[in-house]
Image 1: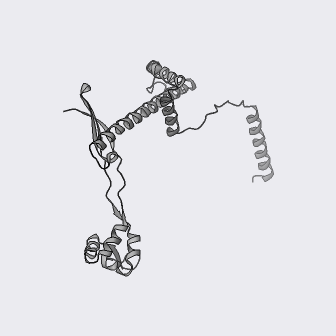
Image 2: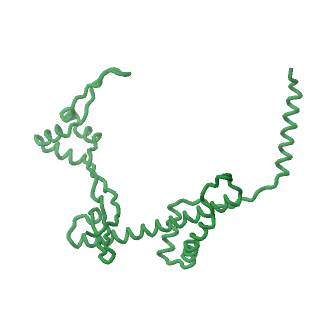
Image 3: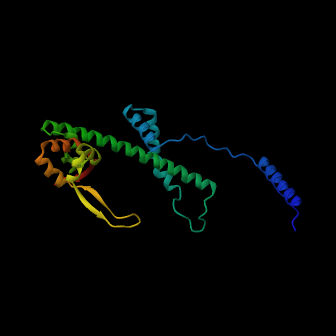
Length: 236
């Protein structure tokens, strides 16, 4: 039978040994890294571009210029004979990854600026042509010298919807007149009849009673603007 006193002493001894090992183990210095997000880094890059921060842009130029050489000097593939990374190679790969991320975010910022500038041109041209809502209208910008054109596609608005809760509140007792009765079979809960709004019935009632049509207009939720995309297409 195990002696509880001996067990307790053994645990105490082991904890004391662990403490001594921890005290003797040298601390490995860690880099004091400031946490950032993609959005914050891209904002800084944008500010550097717009403010023509020469020092920051030169740093970026050096990173991009040296990147191909640095990548070719580093094995990015898994080595069959030694898949386990040593500290030096892990550090090298992390450096390449961070530089790749920086270049990628920089190019993303440039792309954002190009899109905004092209969209501003399209908005101005569409407005001059009499478009009612230029910013939410498709447009193009041709570049014949390169045989390409910018194309803003997918503009417009999503379908509007009805605020059914508000409509039910405003119609009051007449809510039943604009609903279909849907019988719900018994499942875990007892069977019941649900009221489901029928747009056809609502419009039919509105044609009979103009005040209902005003209620319907008041309950319409306008469709939100769609998010268009900028494409580069070949000129035909």
